[in-house]
Image (cartoon, rainbow, N blue to C red; front, side, top):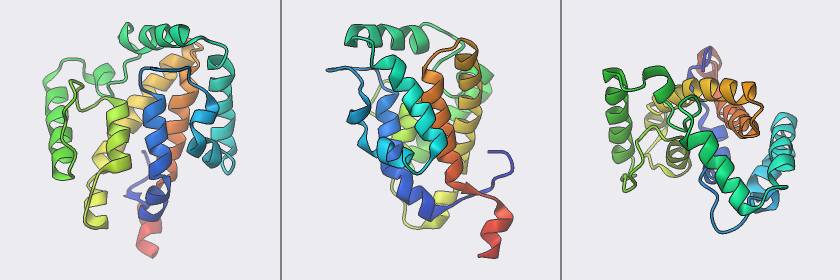
Length: 197
């Protein structure tokens, strides 16, 4: 989040339910086809944000034409079988380097300190998990929220590489990733702006 230093708590609180829906949208499709009406908070939020509206419509214009099996195959081909487009936010930059292991441990500790125990087999840099944490993690006051800047920075970095590769491949998931980037950036503000308050 280059140029941004402080999480705007009021904006962040307002957007947490929408962040939860984006987390769900980035999970493997199960049960029934992904449809725009199944994500009412994203739809509502997009009414006040033209850029998100355009991106989310582009995604669903493509995805709503697919059967559930086709959506599942598309998901797996995009995120599971391609080393350049994983949903693990530190993989592209670090792969299996020592630095990645240290970041994964830091994230896991952050989750535990805020009441989220990792029961899944997913690593702590898995984007839907990170968004789930942002949507549901607990903290006592705004000071703890500012410690989440590391999480925002990891998502910013990872989604940048992910979005660029998806865009290059003309993959419709580029639009969902772009929405996540826009939404999280709306929760940040310049440090000097925060200090004026």
